[in-house]
Length: 386
Ligand code: SAH
Ligand code: SF4
Image (cartoon, rainbow, N blue to C red):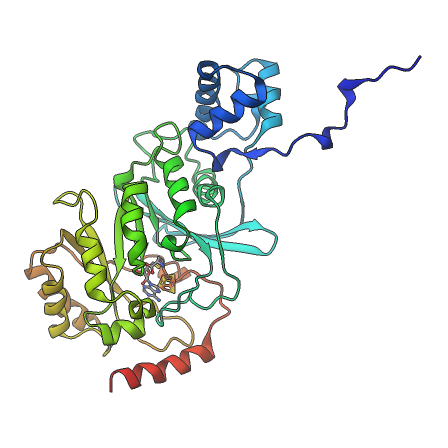
């Protein structure tokens, strides 16, 4: 007589595992409850245990989850994957800045940068897209051919992979090195808001990566209609890549300005939820020699921002091969900063970090450059400036 041996059923036929780092706590609990037939309370308890092992201790192997019974460990291992993206390359600067090339899938890579001594301890600059559909003329990321949105698991995965590399497990000690997250890597986060918001929910969860929303900053080139949604969905800090004080110039530097000009952008900023002295919008201003760096522009910048709780970040332009701009001279940057300073903005110059490894945020892209494009842009810029 033949019997059917169900215990040796083909394991490949099992349902695909779900990537834990892409699920909120509620979604994890739902998945556990449904698959294992547990009631809400029990599913929540298992979720708390699982999350603690995954996010607090950083374990990669379910067998190490010693306060969970053997059978339950096997069930969870069949349900979830703790895979993180592979660090394909890493460069460490003399100042401690670490630039990573992260492989999301074969031949799909993004960069992210860990910058020590920024924020409370150190900041990780993460990417939200592969490449960017926008074409800011001073930015290296702009015309990368392949463009796609990252999923939440790919965004959270960058944080987990870097925590592995920093040896930041268990998390949350007083000596923690990674305290802040900035969405200033590759891509325009507000063109991928749903995935960015989900990633922020997981990163900010006290039982997840546990970095508070006050320490998470999203930088946008100015996708105005998405700014209120960002506030409502994430309550994250906002940074605006302003870079010019009039529309004619901003149309060239940050072309999305043609769609959403400065006045509309600043109106959306003013309405951002929760603004006040301790919760200010950061305005980024890249210093381009002879383009946007006069005293008159510094005064105009201050005037434009006078009704908004703001911080100003002057960013020395980080040159790349074939770029149509140069960085302003140091004297010029200081003179510009002086005017901004006297208007009450503290230390507005962002010191370039990791320059020896081209690791500044917004400078993240492999070396295959948009050289010919930059010649065309030079012409456009000259034309726009009359
Ligand atoms: N797309 C978003 C976030 C990524 S860019 C945005 O544009 O805000 C992060 C910051 O780096 C932006 O302020 C961007 O304007 C700036 N940046 C880009 N290229 C740069 C360069 N070569 N030198 C200095 N800053 C640059
Ligand atoms: Fe895209 Fe930001 Fe670069 Fe502009 S500055 S091209 S929006 S990544």
